[in-house]
Image 1: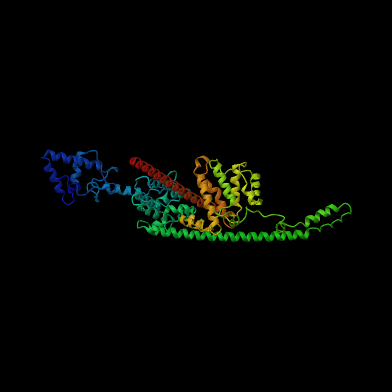
Image 2 (image 1 turned 180 degrees about the horizontal axis):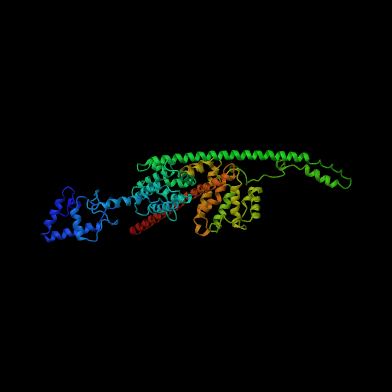
Length: 557
């Protein structure tokens, strides 16, 4: 049968079977047409690119094809083998073997690609990998990762830091390899197999035993912020069965080693700075001592003339004998401030909230909730100091009679911020500062709520009173432009600060303290909205009950 596998491949052990089948087929026109179509198809396929040889067992077949297709030339290098699986040269054309050897020598003499061509090809492969790794597309991510991995470790191109960063982070509206390591299935919410392969590729790129350019990949990876490491989801890789645990452990150990080395370098840098500062101070002292030795003695003071220098002498003695501020406060000449700069326990009311806080918030809630730029626009400094003086040195009866009706709204808001800024200890206390910052960095928000609940009673009452007011202000953010984030930016440095403030601590922890207060405000907003909804539901239920009672009463009448 012409359709059988043995007939198609032309068995080399029984060539006569093919000849007989052709002789028999001449009597049947249909079979002959089928045979001719098969011959024409094989003639088009020509020679194989692998072997470039003819089967030795088919000389009769070759003669028939030469009679049918006279244009076929076996010496033509474009011709390919009739049978892709044959590995023997046909006896009828021994020159074909020489041509095959010559072509193999030409392929061996091809020059390797230059470094620039490798880099361009690597950039194209990076673009291909980023296109395939997008979670919104149904692409063959695993095949793309395997293809890129085989190409990269075969050619090992020298990529720049910009190309490596593009591979890690992606480009415009495209996720990179780091995001691919944390991709989860939308059905099972578990890590994809492509995520495990991406993490394995990431570690192979950073492994110094794999290739020499791993140093550049490590430098770019450790130059990223800690927030970028979260998208890797290393904890899930260590816990889930689909995760790549080996690569996750290696990356975690590398991050820890890098943090330890960074801390060590920072300690050495600080030690070097302290040593340089000490040497500069010693040099300065030596220079001052040398200048003091070279300085001429001061001239003798002239004696005052009687009748002319009596007033100057009297003023000099008066100012030299004048006592300092502490002595004046002890004698009662100067009074201490009674409200600003005092501990919260001394000035708090029966409900734990200071009177100045309560009065400012009540005024602002009545008149300034919809004021644009509230707490962002600064008030009149003279007016703020005048109001502070009234609260500091006024009697309790005078403080109760203080009115803000004639004052600027922004001055009252500035007075409220000034009170919290001059507190000797912030509302969230110095002891809770480190705990709140660490909990926010680790996204343990329940721990932040526990720390806020553990502060003293007066601090807790004042904090809740302030958060309630700021939450109500944020309800009108479309008008006053004060969202929870903007309010947190204004009040976070006053409510949560360390005991010793330095430029490094402020630059490092200010975004974290803002995030802590923003989360507290959002939680308070959600609680107030839930209370209002429950009140509305209760009012509706009460109204429905009243209507039912009225209907029953009418029916009874």
